[in-house]
Image (cartoon, rainbow, N blue to C red):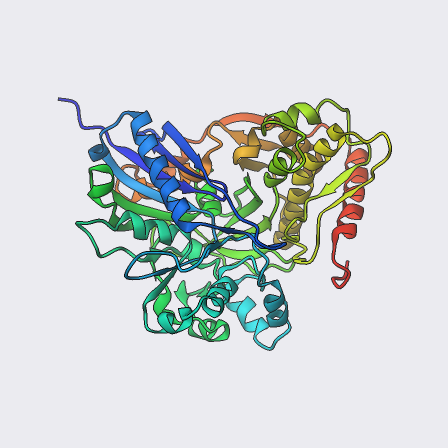
Amino acid sequence: MPPTPKFVLAVDEGTTSARAAIYNEQGVRLALEAIPFSAQYPHPGWVEQDATAIWKAQLAAIHAAIQRADINPNHIAACGITNQRETTVLWDRRTGQPISPAIVWQCRRTADFCAELARSAAAGTIERRTGLVIDAYFSASKIRWILDHVPDARAKANDGEILFGTIDTWLIWNLTRGSANQSSTHVTDPTNASRTLLMNLATGEWDDELLAIFDIPRAILPTIAASSTPIGAISPDLFGAPIPISGIAGDQQAALAGQACFRAGLSKNTYGTGCFALTHTGLLEPHSRHRLLATRAASLNDTPQFALEGSVFIGGAVIQWLRDEMGFIGTAADSEVLATSVPDSAGVHVVPAFVGLGAPHWDPSARGVISGLTRSTNRAHIARAALESIAFQSRDLIDAMEADSGEPILELRVDGGAAVNDFLMQFQADILGKPVVRPADVETTALGAAYLAGIAEGIWSGAEEVESFWRVERRFEPQMHASQRESLIDGWRTAISRARSERTPL
């Protein structure tokens, strides 16, 4: 009698959709389902979402993936969770209901508070202990804002009646909560905790001094568990089987694992709503001199692993802007057709600083700019410039990484939704002057979550086995002459200077 097949479920909750994927024992994806959900923008620079809508979308995506894969839920041996990071949810411990909209990682409502904090005596302590810069991007100021603006929230939080979580924690709480299991699991992992401004990067623990600086009670915080370890089970009420949850990682660290970057020196760039370049630094806790971030990488055991990260706030989201706000395209795929209908951008640059600029600029007051317009500019030129902006911003990150490490990045592994755009990937290789390598499975965020869970449950033996699954789909070699590259980069730097806020030095 053949052995019972084993499958791994990956829960991949992003900024614009809730996704679920099913993998077999060879790491091959059998199904992927995505359920979109919306964000709200109640004020300029504010971004929020309905946490209950996120949960419902994720639940529907898991059901759809199991159905499409046509498998028995009892044969799902592990579940890995990956998520949009920094997005902040606070909910009532008793009812499980959010006490406010979730504040999304892109939201800038706490920018003034963060700017004031960055000028205070506490700034050095925060940055040394967390490896981060003080910015509204991270969770701590979002938590504080909710506690200060929702009636009675702070008093209830002090009494332990309110819980905090990033989206991984929120989903696990709901997945483990059912009529037969009212004791929900309140947990996160070091990759997500390291993005809150509340975790000591070196120890991997919540830091009392950081909690005091942000005035956040310890009682609301989840337990920090390893990224690859059994932490609970999905309630059988939901899918008919108690599926073990054994992996957790923030989306970018999950993508690093999905790209089989488990060793120091390996790098990837994810082209999602934002762009996120990470270089694995192994046991070495990095200290950036060029305004990049030190963060935890997902570890397969209790030994801490680290990475250096650069974050671009608006990457693939600029394609959504072309479609939804500008009406230039009907689908995201149309952006490539429109961009390649002209030979170049005719001197047009788009700087999509819709919510400020991320690394290495960290300018929350910057705003979007379209420069170089002439009477002959058409929508194809603007669309091409918008796509090029993704590559230019990523080039800024790679330059900073190389300056920090003193070592060149020999090739860049890429993934994410916009990585399927051949024009963008070729332009990225050209503007970097380095090969860009696209894997056979660009959904590496979900794949990384599956790897972490599957290794914890013994489906795969470890990093070496999952590294053997990685396959190249296409390699983009740089074709642009160096003089043209430098000219284009000079134009980009001029455009960036026009987007920067007046009070931030160039």
